[in-house]
Length: 146
Image (cartoon, rainbow, N blue to C red; front, side, top):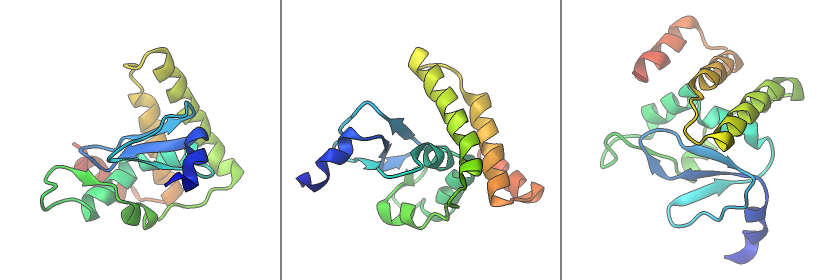
């Protein structure tokens, strides 16, 4: 369907439907996904990229959208993604996420194998705070990712 063809030439998030870990990529290079690769367009995309790749949202998917024939895999279907409780941020809340994502993008552009785990961990802490999670809840999420 060509109805949304112009969306490919805008910033977007590209992701695979079935993966073993989150793989949400922010794209400004006008990539055209195919087959089982999908995209999200709209606003607040860097913020959304940070949240969708976070341990907290991964925990949610592993808890509710995994299993059956997908042993060890997560299935990111549109219907599932639409049900994720994503807080709509103020500009003040969103800005630190944008800064971290920009840092990761710059590092990965310079070296695709760059280690960005420290920045990813900082984003995880920001997501925990955004959702108001307790130390106990954070511990459950962190333990499940080991």
